[in-house]
Image (cartoon, rainbow, N blue to C red; front, side, top):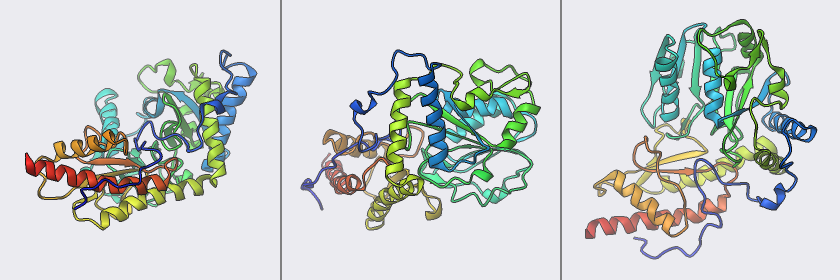
Length: 383
């Protein structure tokens, strides 16, 4: 039993799943080039917004004929924009295995009242991907941020599909290899894998999605912040940096800084390797112990960013209280901040392992996790 606190501490204890850890080289002074107090429609503002779009295309390898837009309200706003603007022409297929995917089901079925086939799986599992009918418009998360379960690849999506694929990829983009030819609408936020600031989302549209926008008008009124067409044509300005509403140029500068760092660590392949190394350290730790395990039941679907863990020791009397107590001990020691499981998820921990986290910090944190576990077991026994 480890009762003595480990000597080594993480240099950065931030393992939150959103907003996530800033890039390791972050310094507020590096944002001094932000055009603060200037209109985002001024030449300097437009140039930086376009640079953010094209830098995203470069790092993620997004095809040249795909449109990329910066939109309001983080990933949530980007997803809602897609649902409200594109769905309704045909039946929808809603696929969910965690909290955010379940939220999109509610929006489509109860708010928009679109005819939909709903496929769900419990936390730790994934739906039968082979059962999805791509004659329908399919809405799914690539990575379940609150369950730690991701789709293993895009092989389940046919190239000759009739419906659109709408993918919430907010904790996958910049950490997983997204097959753009299989994705018609892809959304994510700056606050996830690159550790950007909150409130800004991105939407990526394939030519098929643009065709739908220009040929179909939903039966319901669209709020201004969701409108991507005018007079039956795409508003091209949105996809060159002429945003629908006013963005934070400080947040834009921060995102540009993160994109520069991403280039320095090897682009997408480097970012994926960093996330894989971080998650691998946690997986190896769990594999060597019988009191903790990955919430994802299948190794092929476990996330390399939002790594969700469950305690499996039969001495634990109240799983939720125990997990909260362990997280509280680690926070009190400034070892791991914000690692409790998401509020709707099963009791446990959620450790962010995206590329802005250093593997050395994960390695330093894990012995403390064992210390906190054993300290809490002892406290429970003494109570």
